[in-house]
Image (cartoon, rainbow, N blue to C red; front, side, top):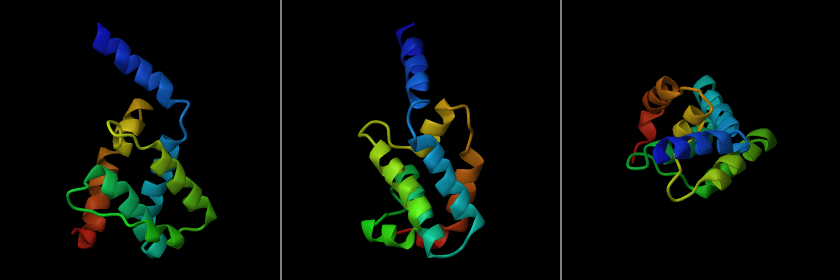
Length: 113
């Protein structure tokens, strides 16, 4: 019962955080485009989802326009030591991005370290 209450509380709390929608916007942009901003967006998301393979450098932030830089800031500010995967944040909002994350990994696999 305690676990279920914790999950319910985490779902409710997530609705008040801007990080999930910001992550979704970065994911969609990285899937739709191929330029340096899309690469930066992909690295931000993939470094959190699959950090054994993808490494994000803060210098990538300069490649984002103002709108997507704000999304990146929201994602990065939303990271905590035990809660860092954007897909988990979105799952709490009842948005399944598992296929999008797989597509992102496939599209940007050349960036694997």
